Amino acid sequence: MKMKSRIAAKLALVMFTGIVNFCVFTACEDKDTVQPSLKLNREAIVIEGDTSAIVTFEINSNVDWKVQSYQGWLHVSPETGSGKSVVTVTVDQNNDGDARTGEAVVIAGSIKQSVSVSQSKTVNLSLTSKEVELKDLDNGDQVKFTVSSDADWTLESASDWLTVTPARGGGGRSVAITVAAGMNTTSGIRDGEIVFKTATRSATCSVRQLKGANRFSFGSEQVDLSDKGNYRSLRVISSTQWTVAGNDWIQVDQTTGIGSQVIKVSASENTGTSDRTGALTFSTGGDTREIPVVQGCAGNYWNHKEYILLSEHTVGSGVPVVIIGDGFDRVDNKKGDGIFDRVSRELADCFLKTNPLVKDLVNMFDVYAVVVESEESVCVRGSKTAFNSGVGPDFDAAKRVSREAIPGGLPATTCWIFVGHGMIGGYAYFGSAVGGGIGIYSTDEGVSTYWMAHEFTGHAFASLADEYVSTPGYMGGVEGLRDHQRNDQCWNVSVTSDLTQVPWKDFIGLPGYEEVGAYEGGFYEPKGIWRPEDHSVMVSLGSEGVYYNAQSRWLIYKRIHEVGDVPYSFESFLEFDKDKGYNVK
Image 1 (cartoon, rainbow, N blue to C red):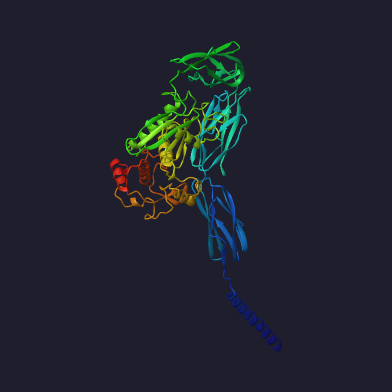
Image 2 (cartoon, one colour):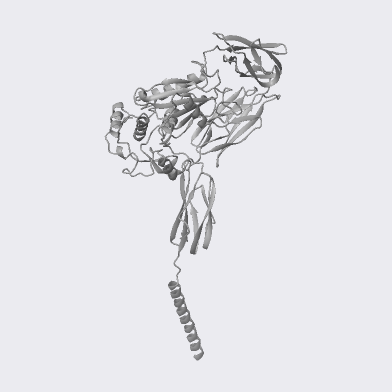
């Protein structure tokens, strides 16, 4: 019995000790439970541009953690871990169009924190044609299409038998592309491609040229010569040997050739009082063809540094506008139906008759067209023109010639329209407090109401800024705008949205100007710069036609009166604005 009692006592002691130990153990566990902590070294990731990107952030936690992403374009690695670690965030290229935001969510125990991720909108790079076809002809056959892009672009590559111009373009505008090729002398079709590229995008146009054939043709149906007989070029397109002959007053610089050849046709001076006609006779094998040659007579051409007065002021001292061109030879400067005479009159009419404010103040303007004679017609690389526009226009030389041509010279406030015969145009340089601006126009564009209102009147004449959003940073952002405003430019946009501080604060609260406020976006920037109204021709050409917002109308009115030396005031503008109904869209 004593033995049993001892065994029972020992068992009881062991059980008691286990219970005590269990109680002590659980009490210690409750007392030492880990409180989770979580620290991230950044709260936000900003991807400037639409390109794919890899970035990191750091996690520091005393417990196990996991990272989750709920967006298909945002990837994290690793997704789980403990302690301190670096997480890699991979962002796919943005092909969705609009700017997008997401987040990487970090969970550590009961704590949840996130890192926001934002990415710029998709950069547009588009072509109006992705497939073009050329005939088997030489460069006499060309095709054109347009490149549109939010960002600057370059011609990355093109098949070696293609000529593509231009090779680059700026963001925020559409650029006309010309594609040409040499004659296809092969026995079959040939295919190639052209690739354009921005920093993050590329676009490809496929080009097909038809198979070669026996050819004998010309780049034009007639050769026009001036009274002086200066040479004009004629393109001969032939797959066989050819010869050419003129007559007693027509000369050519070469009498035979094969393939594509450009010959120079000239003549002795026509001193008569009427045009004279002749012909060039081409022969190839048994085929003979004639190309008419027409030579004008004396007195029918504008001479170098003559000017055409297209409008003359009757109020004030005159607001001068000068149209001057490059790449116009003597034939192009024919009176009446010459291309420079015709285009100058069309530009003047567009400016004076269709442009708001200008058409109602037309009696304050002097508009001149200054004639400049180039040795060769059309501005292309290598052509001999007065201002070298085939490589890069010399605008300062054009202004000097203008001042020499106009009696009494021209004031510093003069604005210019520079017309390139065949060169790329469609842009402008701001005027300033000390000098007028210049709009660059191309005869290839056709006279455009939008170009006249936006580029010339808006930028060159009134120094208005673009009010649309395109490529952030293109003009230097907020600091770039401040620099322009220090030069008395771009007062139709603002670096503040405070309606007591915006440049157009005097319009706020006026009856009839209820739309005037602060609308974010302008000067290429989506944020941080404001425009006075939601719409204006400095944004785009709306369905209602040319519309300048109130601040832009005031700046144009002010500029006209200052240059024309006519008294004005803000109150006189308001009366004019309401009388003409410009304050009502």
